[in-house]
Length: 154
Image (cartoon, rainbow, N blue to C red; front, side):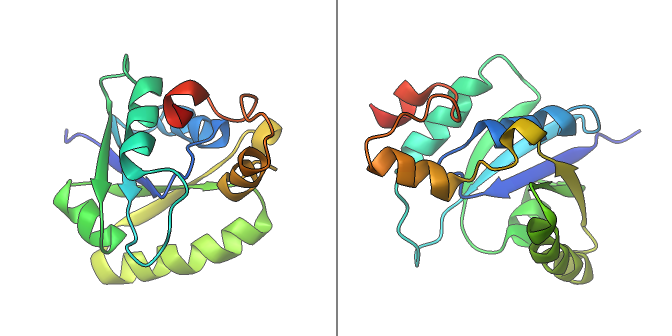
């Protein structure tokens, strides 16, 4: 039986506890999860890509079935490169589903790679990376929403 490998792509600027809840659920279905930190050269990230990768690696340092890789370009191309059988997406609400559904259908049409949606734990359904960045930029504490904050902000 072949190994079920899933790609969880995103900018993860920053990686939140909501993302962690999606990973926890994905690990019940997949043998391996690759967290793909996407870099979009046309978009200014708040946290540097290296910091984001270090941050995520610190969370999963004792979880050998999870790896973190940086990529650019189309997610489906990266998924094929890492031999992912599925793409994971997290959903906080119905708006996320509407947005993600169209992308998942296009990815499937282009490559045959299915997307699997996991609901974020209800405790984190209001948490988004953009909200976390706003809180942080304005001097607020983000520890309740982001694990190992000190690695990200040092």
